[in-house]
Image (tube, rainbow, N blue to C red; front, side, top):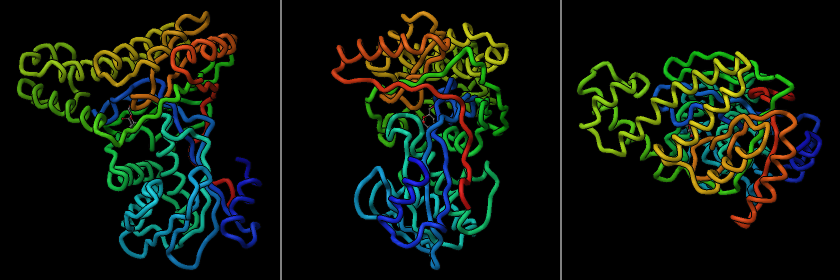
Amino acid sequence: MESAQLDIEFKKHFGGETDKLLEVRAPGRVNLIGEHTDYNDGFVFPMAIERDTAIVFRRRKDQLVRMVSASQPGEPAEFAFSHEVSKGPPLWSLYARGVAEALRQKNLITTGIDALVAANVPLGGGLSSSASFEVATALALLTASQTTMDRVDMALACQWAEHHYPGMPCGIMDQFISALAQKGHAMLLDCRDRSFKQVPLNDPAVRVAVVNSNVKHELVGGEYKQRRQQCEAAVAALAQKQPGVKALRDATMPMLDQAKAAMDSVVYRRARHVIGENQRALDFAAALEAHDYSACGRLLYASHVSLRDDYQVSCPELDTLVELARSVEGVFGARMTGGGFGGCIVVLLQHQAFEPLSKLLHSEYPKRYQKQPAMFGTLPGPGARVVRD
Ligand code: GLA
C-alpha cells in the first residue's frame, strides 16, 4: 500500500491529523538456499524481497500500543509495556507484543504508539511475513522513542519474541535478513558467529521468481520443532565418537556414516540433509559470485530433492511446481523455500524464461490442484528502514 493510502486507513481508525505520522517498513525474504540449517549453526543464503510490512504510526503520551491490521480485520490490539507485556488476543498481535517485551527488558522504549500495520508479504506463504512484522514493530517502537539499536541485536530481539510469544522455535535467518538486507544483494550468513557477506545479485540477464503454491503452512505446529529435536538427537549420537561436534555444522558426511549405527534411520536422513545443505549454501554463493548460474541451478534442484526425501518438509504441490519449472527452457533451477509444508518455491532463471514459466504454471498447476499459483519476480530489496520520521 502506498503511504498516502496508509494515512487514510490510519485516520479511519485513529482519527486526528495525518501530518505527524511516521512510517517504517521491513521486508519479507526468500531463502535462495541453506534450508533448515540456521538452527544447526550453519549457513543460509537469503535475500530480502520487494514486499514488506509497513507500519504507519503516531506517538502517544503513555506506554500503550494500539495497533490495527489492514489485513486482519477486527478491533485494534491494545497492550501496555509499562510492565511485562501480556499475551492477550488477537493472535497476530503476539508478534508485536513479544517485540515490545524484548525491547522493554532492555530499557530501550519509553513511548507508546497508535499504529496501522499493512503487509503485502503473503501471510503464511513461507516468505517471513512474521519476521517482517516483528522487525517493523521493533523499528517503529525504537523510532517513537527516538532511539536506535544495533541491527544484529534487533534481529535477536525479534527472534526472542517469536520463541516466547507465538511460541515458534525459529532460527535467526528471517529476522536477520529483514533487519540487515542490502538492496541488490543476497546475504551469505554464518548462523554460528553471525558474520555475513553481502553478495551482489543484480545481473540483468537473470531473475529470481517466487511461486506461491497457495498451500498455507503452519510452522508453530509440531513438525518444525520435531525437526529441531531430530537434529539434536543426531548431534548427541555424533558427539559420542567426535566430542568436537557441538552442532550439525561441525559434522561431515564421513563422520555421519561412522555414527550411522548409533542413530535412528530418520535421524540419519535429517542429518544428511543438513550436512549436505550447508555445503550447498557455500557452493551456491561461490557459483553466484562466479556468475555460474547453471551450477547454481543444479544446487537448487539438489536442495529440493534433499528437503523432499531426507528432511521430508516438502508437499506434492511444491514438488509439482519444481518439476514444472524444470521443464522450461532457460530455468537454471528451482526448489521449495522456507520452512516447508506449503508456501513457495524459488526459481533462478534467464530473464526471457519468466513469461513461458508463468504461462505453464498457470495452465498446468490448476489442473492438478484446482487452484492457481501466484508468481512474482523480485530483485533483492533493502532491509528495514524508517521511511518517515
Ligand atoms: C523458518 C524459520 C527459519 C528457518 C527456516 C528453514 O522460516 O523461521 O529460522 O529455520 O524455516 O530454513
